[in-house]
Length: 330
Image (cartoon, rainbow, N blue to C red; front, side):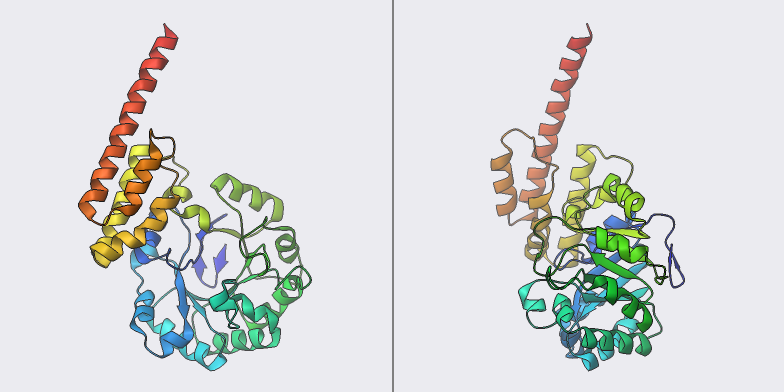
């Protein structure tokens, strides 16, 4: 599969762009474990044009994570064009336009999935951004605003005419937010439309590489994008299983990266979402109390001590299992 001149191999699996999740450290870890493409957090076009430094910092990308896309959102065409030019100077491999974010503070203001209520404007922004930059431009969107407005099968060819070089479709409407089950049937219909020649990337409810394989087989998509299932699991992209000890090591590395990138307080705060979601510690004795302590910890030394305690619990459980297994063999 290719997006422009970017070669992504067969059946590539991407890391979805997610606010407060896909920072540079997490992207690098996901890339190490096999993500074919990673994306930044959402970048507000209006904030970027105003030179808001917290937004500008989101443009930082590294060679270790390539190919990497920077995702823009906004509702004003002029701001989107100006922001795209700024993004291009940051040196990503592509620019992705966010027409899919369903949260109220974005979609409620007409940006993200809110654009699905104004298709002419959505197409105008897309066309103008494509014309303004040399980088490949892609789009991520949803099936439609609600179940009565499933526009994706007619929208996809129009976006292709605007010059985008790939389309990611999340199999839900904006009204669904993240509830219910993602419907991949319309994604498959777009992919099998003979008029569509750009890559189609499917997204929604993929929690493992095995499920990604099933989506490739069933719907014929060119790539699969994984989002929420990666929380606390950057190794999800690896076909080589990690031991629990190794998974804890990865979470510790992620924590250290975040602390080094910001400071102790913000680094820990930024890592908590992953620690709350990770399945690594489930099944450990008295996990509930350990989890509470983990999410309350405010010092790096305290969190590292909790990690080591968890390693000891895992090792003890493994020794017990080994004894049981040996006893069962005699």
